[in-house]
Length: 212
Image 1: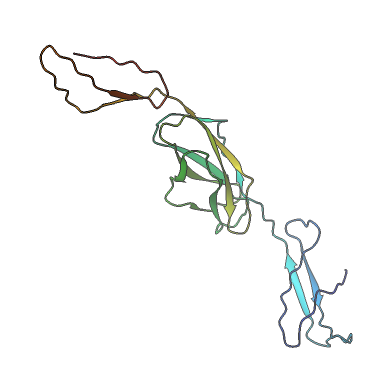
Image 2: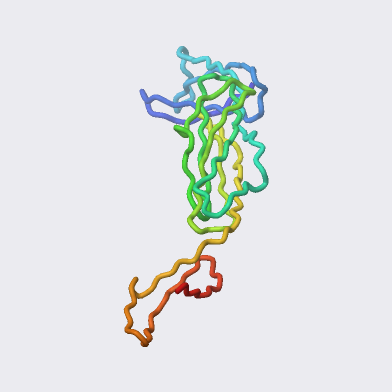
């Protein structure tokens, strides 16, 4: 019911029109409007008025529906852990696709797709689809890490971030030992001095035991 000036363009030039209703319209709404072409002196085209029709289709953003634990527990030096994510596509179109995107990386270790591809087929509205992401911890690291993921569809919708927390419990690593040479030679009734180097990644105190 209102008219407004959209913009200026040169004679013979095409003009792209972008319209926003300015209010929230319910899904299924429809309407029409007329586009007039007017010159700088205020004369309006007698013919060529274009009737523009529109319809409103609700674009519901994807959402996480994964009931993940507060913290996923693994032990230090485990090779990896797979986390199954469940997303729901809010669009009813069967041709839509969903994609899982990493928006913040873990502080230690790396993530990689455990599924064959990070694209999964969309599902009808109300149904869900799954995606598996793999976390590979850093060697000899124990502690807490986290990373964030979102679901995205192919029409611009994106879910809010979902934080995945990994709690890595420490395990006791065996110390390592090295000496200056594997063989020490000495004469009868004599002594020899040699150095043994011990190391423990956990920082534990070490004791030297000689088995003769």
